[in-house]
Amino acid sequence: IQLTQSPSSLSASVGDRVTITCRASQGISSYLAWYQQKPGKAPKLLISAASTLQSGVPSRFSGSGSGTDFTLTISSLQPEDFATYYCQQLNSYPYTFGQGTKLEIK
Amino acid sequence: EEELVESGGGLVKPGGSLRLSCTASRFPFSSYTMNWVRQAPGKGLEWVSSIRSSSTYIYYADSVKGRFTISRDNAKNSLYLQMNSLRAEDTAVYYCARASGCYDDSCNRFDFWGQGTLVTVSS
View 1 (cartoon, helix red, strand yellow):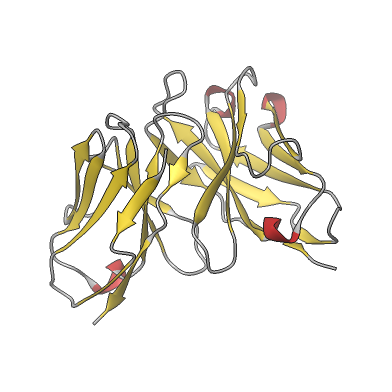
View 2 (tube, rainbow over the protein chains, first blue to last red; view 1 turned 135 degrees about the vertical axis):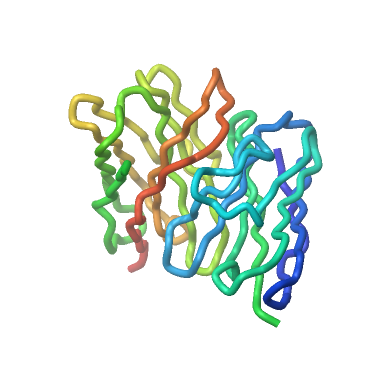
């Protein structure tokens, strides 16, 4: 199953609302997770099961979708949100990741 | 809090072998599907392999099938990745990660990750 994230990079300002999309090449129900990764660090789980916010993750992050189309939304960007974001499908093996979206400061 | 610590990375020549380890603490290791994920320098995340709690089911990415072997020792709370016939394109940071919310071949998340260990394949 291939995952296509868009955009691959995004420039935005603090306070902006941003949306990242992830499209699966076939249906994956809601077995989709979103991760945030900062340089030199391990990925951090943000959202699982397409829309369930991980404990401790700020409520400005939200996820939606099912089947083949998914979105990650950050309602009001904060300085600490500038990072790379990945989606991952865990519906069936081989598990796959999207290619990543690098969120940069405008 | 749960912890995963990888070790065993280093510099190895093409065609060589390396064994990575991941030691888990502060959670019931034997109850979880465990995974290896890698990231080549400047590139994205790539799932490598998964092993279910009792080692009955094991899965590999096509890119490593036949060369890498995943295993676990639940008594030692440890996960391993034996890497043989290494190639330059295997150069990456290797992370171990815990999967949770799993049913058959589907899981909901990789919820805890180690800090990673760097494998460099070069002559």
